Amino acid sequence: MSSIKRKPQAVAAVEQALLRCVRSRGVISRGELSQELDLVQSTIGVYVDRLVREGYLKETCPAERGLGRPPLLVELNAKKGRFIGIDFHARQLKAVAVDFAQQPLNRVEHELSEPVTAAGVIDVLLQSVDELIGEHPDDVLGIGVGTPGLVDSDRGIGLSYSFIPDWRDIPVADLIRNRWNIPVWLEHNIRSWALAEYWFGQGRGLQHFVCLCVRSGIAAGMMVGGQLFRGTANLAGEIGQWRVPLTATNGSAVGTDEPVPVSVEDLSSLTALIRSAVERISRGESSVLSRHGSALGVAALLDGVRAQDPLAIDLVERAAEIHAWMIHQLDCVLNPQRIMVAGPLTEASYYWERLQDTCRNYRVPHFVTRVCRSELGTFGGALGAAALAVSQWKPQR
Image 1 (cartoon, helix red, strand yellow):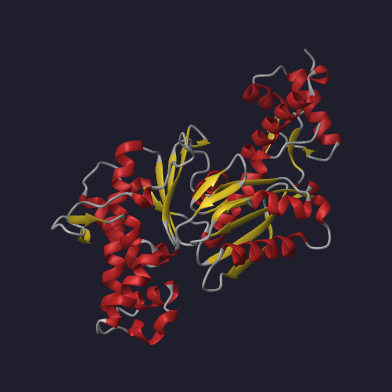
Image 2: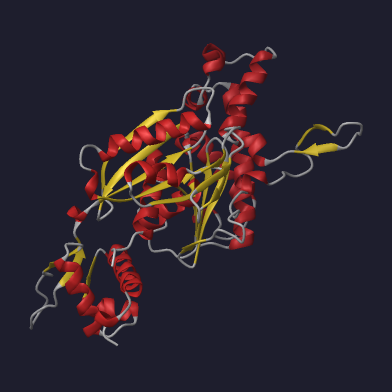
């Protein structure tokens, strides 16, 4: 059946798949698209010609390769529209605008004021979208939001997040759509980061990988068979709730002498590290970190490591050991092609070296060579949220 006779929804679905294929390849011929999508070349030609006429694709001539006329290639038209990606956690919000070819255009970032509340986050989120949209909203095709905690992606709702106590059933997607009438998609922010690795980073060209991200909390984004793995109740990747081995405890249960296991997030997230530093200083432990008082943050902690401060080194060293243990468990369960580690701690060479040394101690063949640092920088999550919008968007038919 000719694609012209297909129902509009089916046409849009094929065009979405075609555009994704072009995104993954950069430039590609009609013949290669026919093979990739398992459609006859004449049908592919109909779709490509329409997308070229409408400006989503453009044709380009390849370099001469011997005798005969080389086939025309197609690529994305970067000027066709923009996408916006937003990523936040309990400390800050970052947002980025990308063009139709997913190249970054501009970006904004905001620290979240203490105490962080749901209303405050929404205000900053809407302000950031407004800054990126500017005076010409008509070319914005979609907005992706990477949300921490539990997420209902289908309804676009942030369900809960332990580090923002009143973050409960927040209709994030509707709040944005109601203001700008632009399609909005919601995803867990670390799964969004995994999407960024898939399209831009060290997951490019891979089908199976894990992105472990350590920020206010700890979570993992997993790509399985080239698709985000969400689990049956959209809870996959909440590994910050893993209970550590019984030797690591947080006091005793009330009325008993039994130790109470704590989660890896309780011990080795950025929130936990800062809290532990403040507590130890309050008990009289000497540290250069004491000069920051209640304003102690991650940047100061990493500066302390670089200054060889014993307290800062001890905290970061213990975190690296816990994270290496987590990486080992993920590798045993999933056996991915690669495991990326993301978050501010990876900027400290001491942390990274300690993590690698601990990984080596597990003596798993080729294990360490498959563990790498994310190279996307602090806007990796925002880029992933933009990639979420790009991957979900399809032409309206």
